[in-house]
Image (cartoon, rainbow over all chains, first blue to last red):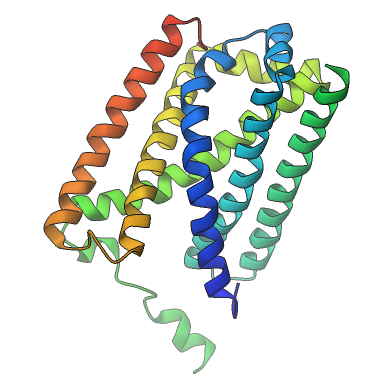
Length: 111
Length: 134
């Protein structure tokens, strides 16, 4: 994170701005969506609008989450564990993006 | 600066030094809700991945959400998202150089606690009435 604080600061604000409309959409749809059974969930995610918006929320959310969690790690962890946790944080965020992209992709072409 | 000396110095003022204020509580809650959203979004992603390619994963996530404990997971995620978004708007407003006066910051902190609680209640109420989770 060192030496590029300004770009990280701006990126955290840019993702925050994008996450406000996406988060609002998630807030008003998530409770009903999570109540669906397997077939219902597949049908819901096969709607392009739902797939794109949930995908965008998780992907942009992953970028925002990575910066926020890195800030917490840097604030509280001062041992060799810091670098390990920062690396895990990167991997979790990248894995999150990859998993959701792959899922949405599979819905677009098989659903 | 030796290693021993740096290890014994405090890193920042400790919580017990400060008089408790609602602005401080909102700051801590912003971090806390951020962590909740980190975990909750991983669970949400597991739900999406399960629906896409893994019925066993979907059934694990779905049964967790539909368990009695699941109500608190959904409640926690919805309130955390409502709070973090509203307080995030407060932070963006601060970034513009406004709203930083102690009186204003205290008022907006209270406002966000109340508004995020009400919004979460409305969302859960209408969501469950429409056949939502848990």
